[in-house]
Length: 170
Image 1: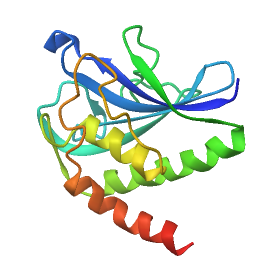
Image 2 (image 1 turned 90 degrees about the vertical axis):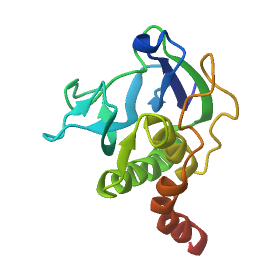
Image 3 (image 1 turned 120 degrees about the vertical axis):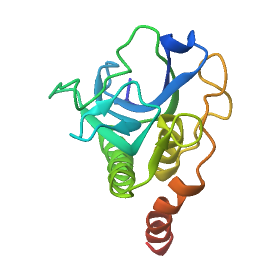
Image 4 (image 1 turned 45 degrees about the vertical axis):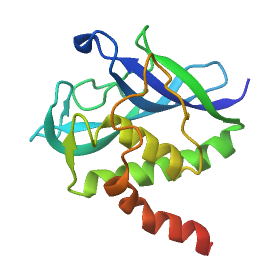
C-alpha cells in the first residue's frame, strides 16, 4: 500500500453525531497517521478550541510524532471518524501535495478570519486544504449528512488565490 491523503469526518457527539468536523490526514503505507490538518477556532493562548461557537479561524497541522492534544487535535484516530481517499501515491508524491496543504493552513492561520460554527469552520478549512492541494473534496457527505460550512468558501478561497496564481504561473 502507498502513502495516502484522506478526507475525514468526525461526528460531533454534542450534536448527536449529525453535525460533523471535517479534517485532512496523511497516512503511511501501513495506514498509520503521520500528519493531520484540522480547522477550527483558536483560543487566545493559541490552543485549539474544541467547543467553539465563535473565535479566530485557525488551521492546525498535527505531527503525530509530537503529540500535544492541547494545541494539535487528533481526529483520525477516533473510532467514530470516517474517511475517504483523496490521493494515493509514493512518499514523494504525497509529500509534495502535503507541502501545499501546509502552505494553505499557514495562510488561513495568518488571515485574521473569524470562525463561525455554521458558516466558516473546520469543514470549510478541510475543503480549502483539499482544493489547495489540487484535490477534489468529496461531493457527498463522508458522515451522515453534509457538514455545515463545507462549501462556504468565499473568504477562505480568497486566501488561496495567491497560491493558485503561483501554481498557474509555474
